[in-house]
Image 1 (cartoon, chains in turn green, red):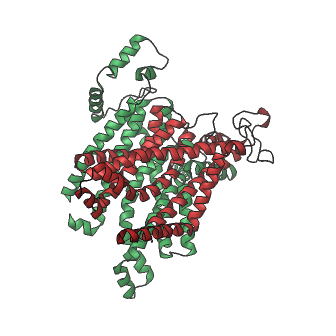
Image 2 (cartoon, helix red, strand yellow; image 1 turned 90 degrees about the vertical axis):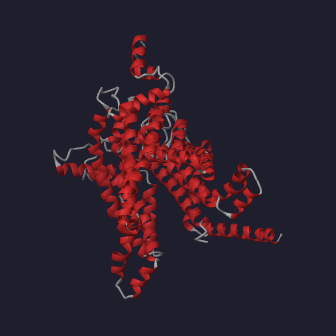
Image 3 (cartoon, chains in turn blue, brown; image 1 turned 90 degrees about the horizontal axis):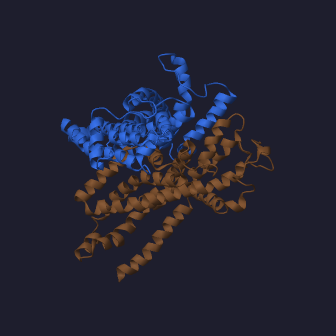
Length: 315
Length: 289
């Protein structure tokens, strides 16, 4: 098992290196002279020369990359041009908010997606299955920012049940924190719930067709035990790993959700940085998200082996 | 000779079976209908739009839907229906063009990676994994940010972000197909690699790519709407459904129609492509046949 984990980590290293090259290359896409973009209104040749020297823009591109990655490896993702705060500090400050939102959304998605997927597979071909599929496909097709707008119009503006926007840290007021998070988490979790439902249904259908389920039924076990104990346990194996992978998607989805509900998280940070032309922050966020995603991928692989006895013994 | 005749008889029959399976799938047909409906609207947009979609009219600001303005007017008095009809072009074009970019770049890389293997495959595969590690929307936002906000750059950003899906899919298909006897045979008689890929491998990888492309158009339309919603796609005053929603979010209580109609349009067109793609996948799946 340890050898498997070590091998997976070794495979992840070149991917992380290529990600870093990609993120660095983003800077090269800036049209025109990057120093002019960074300097804004400032056109003093001395300032421009200073910036060129500071960001090593006179050096060849590969040297610039190695200088940049050297700093990144020491935890220095650069300084925000707008706020003068280190990018890593900014990201670490916003991350807990987004993580809370993503965890809430994941709980909602699992609570909706898995039971619906099971019922849909067990009732395959019935109107229940058809309805569940229609709802799932609608969940996948609805843009989450529009769903957010609709919910704000109904739940906050018309019924005045929940706050339309804003964020209160749980340490300040836990109940208000939950109230502000319910709607954004639901909006973020909907697409994921639909995706989980479809995967659970397909995994359950595959398992329900297998020989050991037929044997369990032939033994005279009641249907509930066959489904919950024999089928679900095996069907859940790919779902667990999929949920880990989808967590990365949640971070991306949070960009729009945070924008609509004015939540000061990771996603809002990147959008604000884009409009402020704060490129170091954009690069930092992309790099952190990608590395986070690679780590989640690694965890998913390890989890897959851990929960699957056949693979565990094969290692 | 016998084989050729048998092929001639079997292939049209198989094609007919796929077609009849697709035509018999009600959801798929509904999806195809929705897609066709929006294509017709996009093509005939200038003829359908009853008002100028760009020129402000300060006497008709935020009017509710009526016989004159079917979907109401926006914060500058422009007809929402006309803007939506013209906006259909931006959405559909973004979906199709970005997927075309993704396919045209991704499929050749996937073919080369799967067919030649070795260090070429390792390099392309690791690069694909690296690109897939960056969540689709974050990558598209970052690219659009660095390239500059415009519909063209949004399409390039979405296309590049979607490309790795096609590299991986094509590579996987090639690995299966290149072990087939007819490819081995083609190699044995000394046909050049380029010809083998073009004549024997590409046609066999196309069906799953077609399905994926249809489903990716749906994702690309949502991505374009998301970028435009954030202000990184279509720029004012030109309309796109995403940018219309961006403005509409500031008038949620005063003018709910401004967000209801463009959002519904995005939902319906994405649903259409998803239903169409699902139907296509079921019809082309040999296990289902």
